[in-house]
Length: 165
Length: 352
Image (cartoon, rainbow over all chains, first blue to last red; front, side, top):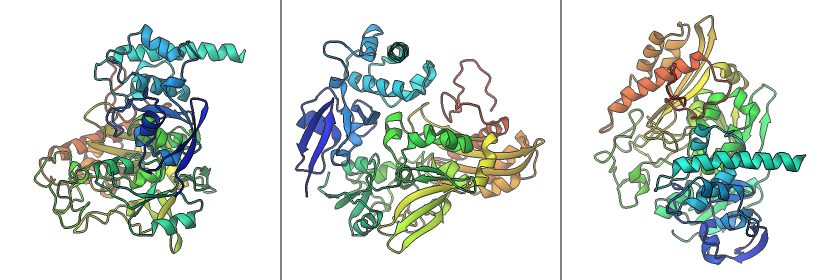
């Protein structure tokens, strides 16, 4: 069985020989590609720490079989910023204290990026809380997280308006 | 996780042939089956990946006004499809009340229908479970069972079916299209999931190799669109399975119920259509009295399977509230907290 797959990870093409079909996208990122920003929390789809974008959509990478994603485009926390410049969602998490220990933060940020691009929350804190409910924060930084997402939503909307003009 | 072979067929007949082999299991997004495999509750010899099968990812309008949804359409894409949500708002609300945004982005329509029970004893390979291992017994019967079934259970299995999506679907007469070794056939969603009886391992009407390729909603089910809700009681506000839930859909004329649909979730081993309650509602005035009679009819056969008598009262309550909300009218936009019995506006009067 040919277990070679090709993925685009943070804009770069990666060909991976998997040897074993059991590898999840999460384990592939962390253990084969050394992209350890994506965290392994529960490994059962319950905590959201492993959230990444696959073809532009946020999913739990722990419940995705890597083989099945052959050809997909993946964005992880490592691919979000532009060089030394943070992504607006990253900056907003810092500005609003959207974390304490930081373990859930990469997943929170990737989930927030996904949520904003889905366009369903529309500046409503309740819709943001609902849309972020797949990301658990054991430190309880939810207030800061909600504020960060609200601000990042505005920043990105302004930026999109400027680039459209 | 046990080692397995992986195949990725490119046509439906190839997939059906591969999955007809003993030990084979279909893989779509994998949000449920990979979880079960990690815990050892499901140990397939071979995964048949259906995600590349052509033509199964479309949402189509049918000549009768109904809709046909390919089995690979993702839960989120269906819920946010404007035409679908307009025609079948309770289904969209149920979808958005299930799981998390990440899981809804991945999970498919066919996978949602085929998801397994979340009974903790089914999940734990060290526990006795007739559903997982026929004849081994049921540790739930005398175990932690306050969330287990109150309708349709047997002494061999008291697990519930966990889907939200299936609850309004069964109320609206959804039909499942199946491709099998003998060709294409279709069955009512109501007949897809089986009650446990003395063979809880036979969970569905599917034969080996059978693949769900699409789901259909009839055009006349859209006539409930202006009065259709899904309501779900959970142990936390979001990202939790139903303790009890109800889908209610009404056709009203001058305050009288011309036609009614009602189904319950979280109470039985399958999505539970409450036809006796629908009969009570038809022709009645749409008021609290009729809704209470309907709730009593819906739960008339309920009995606790363990430490869960409270679910019978909770289910009656959720039925009455879902009917009240349906009678008040489908909101223009889905609430911020879909299917929540709690209002999302602090201090606001809730009309249920």
